[in-house]
Amino acid sequence: MKKAQVTALPISYIFIAVIAAIILIFGAKVIKDFYSLSEKAQTKKELQNLQNDIKRVYYLSKDSSQSMTYQFSATISEICFAGNLEGGKNPNSKQEELIKGLKDSNIFLFQLSNLIGKENIDYLKDPEATSESIQCFSTQDGRLNIILTNNGNYVSLIKV
Image: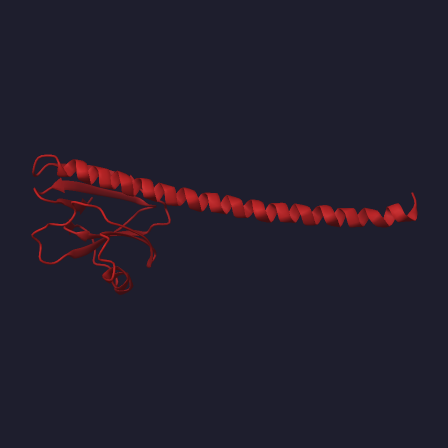
């Protein structure tokens, strides 16, 4: 083997290693982005299911109720609702501060104490109520079990 061929061989190995590292780094980033997108899609789908179920229960006869289970992303540790609720706990001070300025929403999704999503769903608030309570329900691996009850002019939630 000639001397020039021997010295060119390590350079080509280094070049191949650099290209492989670049492919691995960008591949990991793409996989991470797909995972994040799938979590957002799952959360959006469950919020849509919740909204549809609340609307369906609202149009049932008064005092009818249904038990429902929703599977949000496991990163969601607590879901807070503004409206007429039972069985939850009051939000902590950081959550309450984040929720206070968001009057256009009545559902708040938290990862630890960080607000990661909010939504407004009709039929949750009693139109005759003078004040609005905020209750937070912790989730077990993203799972939320609630009972939806038709109270005539709004739907109430009870954590199971």
